[in-house]
Amino acid sequence: MRLISALIFIALHTNHGHAQFSPTLTVNSCTASKLRLTLNNAANGGIIYIQGQTSACKQTTQFAVTVHEFDFASCGITWASSFKMIVQKNALYQTGDDKQIPIMCIMDLTDLTVGNDVNTLDKDDDAGQNLTVKPTASMKIYRSGLDVGGSSVQLTDEITMIVELDAEYKADFDIVAKDCSASTIPIVQSACAADTALFPDFTKPAPGYLSNSFGAFRTTDLNGGSVAMTFSCTLTVCQGSCAPATCPSGNGYGRKKRGISKRQASPTPAIDDISVGTTVTIATEEVILQSPDRESDVCMNKGGFIAGVITVLVVLTVVLVIIVYITRKFQESKDVVGKLNGSA
Image (tube, rainbow, N blue to C red; front, side, top):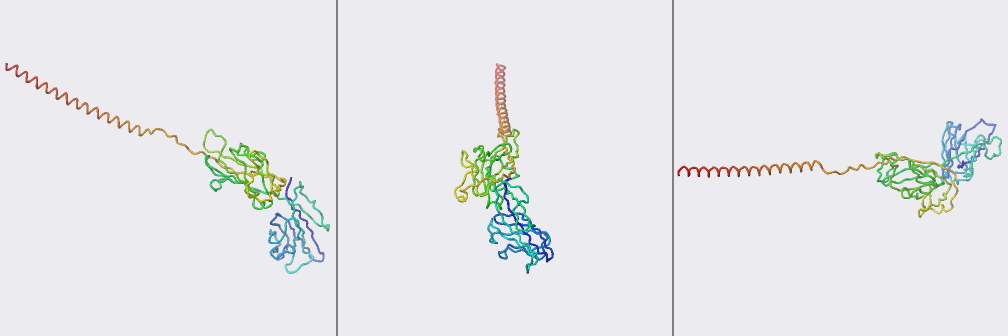
């Protein structure tokens, strides 16, 4: 496996005329900006410091297990240079029991086998160890500037995917999104977008930082509702700048934006692969089908029916009045004729 290796060479200088003082020092990480180590069995009130530097690089020790961090910028240490770490039993004076531990942090891009096979120093009891460090990264999805990972967005939303190395690795490493998928849908293959209409190529605003804005999408669900989409990527990690892939739409890490530092001009080979991912639920907006307002229609129909009934009743009443009037007139005429005939 290709990993970053910090080679630590330890020389324990022992004076048999004094009481044994055998602290144990383990380097946890050694980056371009910081040295982090664990110290055990040191002396209470003793000190640990980088030789030849200011008091900013001096810390107090304890017999118990303690963790110490040294900032290289404050200590004036250049990465890939050798320096001595001193573990001193007494803060006021030095003795032969004090430990001098030469340390050098270097990059090793070759295949490593972890073991005690580092170069020996000038003493039979010198010991060494290999420390391997693997960069880490994260993936986040945003909508309108808010992280929506683990929550829900609408199918009509525009969302942005951000993939970036963790802060402590950005100064020294770069990444390429080699392969990505959205659940069962491949979206990046061999560092190129599989379908730019669905998911365009990544842009690269800064080393170790990839960005991609796209319309939300999901796998087909005939039942509607919400669908959980798992976005995941396999990232290639490089020391320095990663070489972009040549894609139909441009460079495939993705496209290089103007204004990126010139130090990316000389890409270096990949050293490892890491994985990142997150899940977002994609929901559809409920659409209510607009149908004729039946209640209004019923009201209108009822009103028309009532108006019709009233009209009919009015007409019938008028007809009835006319019939009664005609009947009376006819009867009156009949009576008059009868009287005239009787008189004759």
